[in-house]
Image (cartoon, rainbow, N blue to C red; front, top):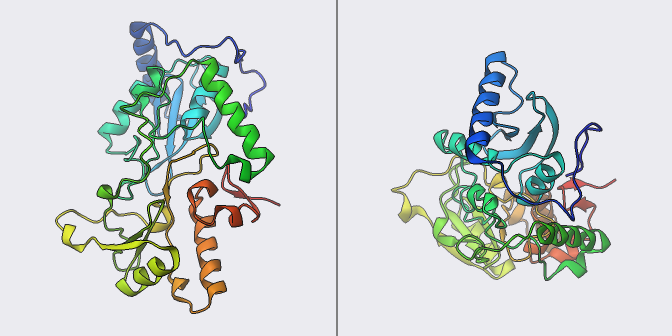
Length: 317
């Protein structure tokens, strides 16, 4: 979220707005810049539209946003999250209309990026609705300006939440009910998880805020007794193809101000360990690996004391 280019143009948060450029000019500029970048073979990102780009991770899931100058050179990058997009485009003077071209390209490539589509088959509410963001909405299925549990996360989390709320207020954003529904995980979207080198995981334990996939009913039942959830066998839904991603990557990316947005945590095979400490450590290791936000996890207050910066998912020194 921090601007790394010293020559980047900035605007005051208090005076900036999310008003896009004229549609015709923005579309022509986006097409021209995209063609120019492609013709040189110097792609600044996997997908480029105007002065915005998107890079994917190894599973083909949007990983980060890329911000370009007028010549198509990379200025800086940020996490793939609505707040970061708004903050960086505002500071760099980039039109949000460039998101339209990105959405068209991602749709054509079959890349999920919208709420409930970013992490396909997990029911995760993470993802960004580009059209809603352009229209002055929050762009997410959850309200990233609120967090009922922020006080338990310390001064850093409180400060980030205040900054997020101030940004939304300065841009006069509105939580559009049809997009920002605040319903958390959608269990109707659960799908079998296909993990590399392992049998597909079609048993899912869900306790209302955390979901985890397992390859056997025994593991799933054990998790349900430990975390108070129920187990669903997705095998009857076999008419649909298993989602080809490792369950460890089925959780949503970290968001420091997601108040109600629930996420998925996949527990490793060591969850079958007999001792409480072993099982707790296995869960913590899996959460570290999945970058699950503390507020969406039932063990959030315990994990908050572990050496992880939950705003980025990086371990602290």
